[in-house]
Amino acid sequence: MKKQKQGMAVIVKPTYACDAACSYCEVHKWGSLFKPMTKETFLQLNKKLEEHFETNDAKVTFYWLGGEPLMAGDEFFGEVKEISYNSSLQISHAIQSNLISFSKKEFTNLKSLLKEFAKSNSKTKDKKSYTISTSVDPVSDARVLKNGKDYNKAFLKSIFKLKKEGASYGAVYTVHSGSLGKEKEIYYYFKNLEFKAFNLNAMCDYSGRFQERDFGMTPKDYGKFMINLWDLWERDNYKIRIMPFTTWKTLRDTGSQKELRCFNDGVCNKNLCAVGPNGAVFACDRAMQAKQEPLGNIQKDSFEKMFEKKYHEKRISYIKNHDCKGCKWWDYCKGSCPYESREEFEGSFGKSFWCEGYKMLFEHINAKKEEVRNEKETVFATI
Image (cartoon, rainbow, N blue to C red; front, top):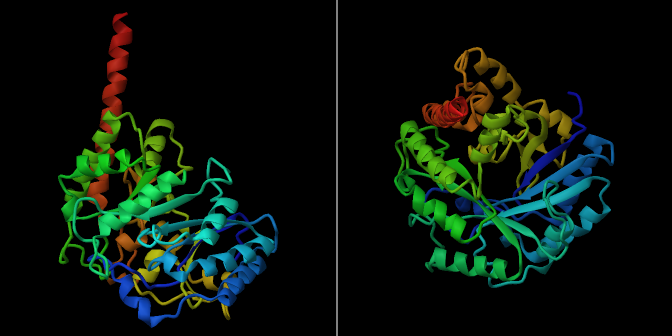
């Protein structure tokens, strides 16, 4: 396999432990199965990445997820900062946290890490500020704390602390059956709390049975939700960045696919992986949650050897000529994430379960663009 010289996004889960027990998440149940990541393990990860690229021009972004990454402790992030300073790689760091413990502790090392090694595509390099991504559900009681206290109250306390410190923050929002019909409430929750952006992810049951679990919805349900949310966003003149809406708007308006997220760019095979607390490496975070066999482990395997096991490139080639053959929305979707499609995740190369919903949205937003264009041509013709 040819070495990837451009860089890599590495999702790192320093622990599976979590202080929450959300109804639609199983990761928190794994917390007792693995010890937290050690300084030595992260040092080995950095070493294996340096060997893989063999150049100090390679850019690597570490995305810290969990479980709840803050439960790894602030001392651990101080060790991460020290290793990052001494690395030959061009390193940046980003984190997604539920923020529950953030209001109780200062996390001085973590804040310093995020300020000094800001995510590479950040528009600001302000050393006095930092950015954190989080996750919240303002319209259901699915998110609960293990200690029985109010999740949203603890969450908002941390948000107000972030605002006071001048930090910026975004969120991941998981769309489920309880979200349906509540698009306006969801949109203005994020806007009014001044979130920098929020990212939509549809509820995924990693057993492959998307409709048999609580919170499940149909592709048509998801399509209606996205259309309603898009129209709200459009009427508000696109005031907040919504992913993947923002990238799809850019594609619709300019034809550019450069900003498409990994679900839709068709190249996640080349520059993405996820690493667990013990050094096990997976194709991505979803592969880890689907309990796939790891590609290998940084303690004994090279990235070159591990990446040879990734199948995503084969899937793209296959579905383009089968499930997605002739689809006019291929540039928008490319079959979407493999973990939205694989029955029982055992090797099927099918298109996304949410295909019908995506098509509904793409038809809708492009029809609206055509309406606007026709209106402009009519006005011009009458002048």
